[in-house]
Image (cartoon, rainbow over all chains, first blue to last red; front, top):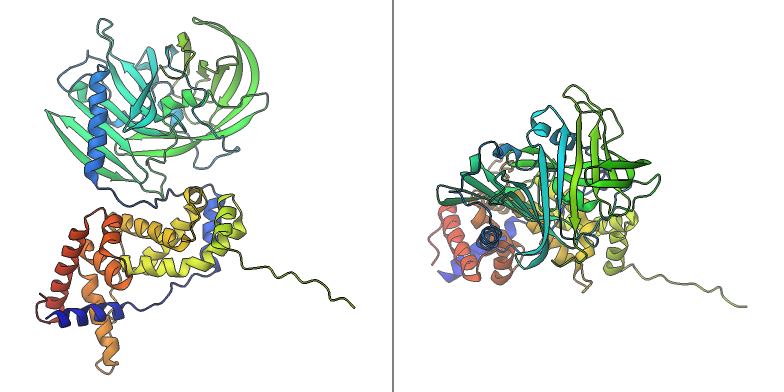
Length: 350
Length: 183
């Protein structure tokens, strides 16, 4: 019997003879063309670890949420503070329509960003103008950055969307960002009027998503589609983290750089898009938080915009904070937000 | 009369090519492609049962290679490292929805074909009808020569699970090919 097994094994081996795949110059040419267009593919040389480990890491994230006073599925936030599931990838600080206008390829040299200049802090912005669903839905935007860990890795915890109830501050949106390169590690967002929570762990080739509601959590794996640039752990930055990325940008007169952001909020899919930054001037800006000498930066591709018009950022020269944002208008009206208060720690470790 | 000095340049090592490709040298990437793409494509094709899918794997691998090489530690085993990446890409594709699988049995295959060729095609077809989780182990173990320990690491399963999958696969192949049950 054993002998017949060996015979079968030999038959199988013989059925797949050595016949290398033909790889002509066209194949190499296509590879070089794809790279020339800026396309990249995240590769892993590590063995699969099994999804149960991912679940443990995400469970640890959920535990962290409790420590930081995140609402549970039974804590219903005040009316009006809900975020639809479809807005999971939207950014609290950046208008979603503008985020959706990123390009598939960078126009400027790719800016190399890391997290060395990021500090813990709190920032509050007021949206002064904006009549679209996205920009007018939150009149006050707050962001808190704290030192944390995610699955044993040093991380920045980025908290946004506090509940309007000032007596018990709770953050509805949490993101863990790698301290070394600002890549998004995980995100947990309150959904369904606070009756659910979606926790995403971004891995190299997939996203582990936990959807918690009615006391139980369903885990699913969303595989990255590298051909369309869908979300994966390779996603460098998410909208809120753009604020942190600006801390490292080597801003100067005439500087231009492209960065990749997670944009286009679509349920289960979130595209990686390129955003081009160009320093177009220097201005002194007065906002509620004070008076700042700023770099004026054009955000987005240099081509014509379809909705809100070109967005400009005024970034303070000293702190490299976003002090003011504004767009010129367009069919959906303009947009303007200003810094109301900003506080940053001296140390990186608080 | 002195002879002109001739410097014989040794073939560029994998490590040198990897370092240069990681730094963005296109010629180094091209050389790596010529050295390894055919064999990596064969490996992917065996796992996926589809030449177009295998070509996709090779394409993706080399598009992402310069960045990935930043993690490569030159230990003289570049091909083994590349094969691991290729297997991971192929497994990812296997899990994906859009797959193409070729039936190796041509419609006009007649009995006049050489018996050995007929047997190869029948065995190929039987292997290709196995569920992916069994088929992958068959290819990695019997065709590619990986150990059960290595397969376990690649697939995220235990060594024992790999052995069980192979046993089940062989039993199915036996049934499919009309042979007796393997103990």
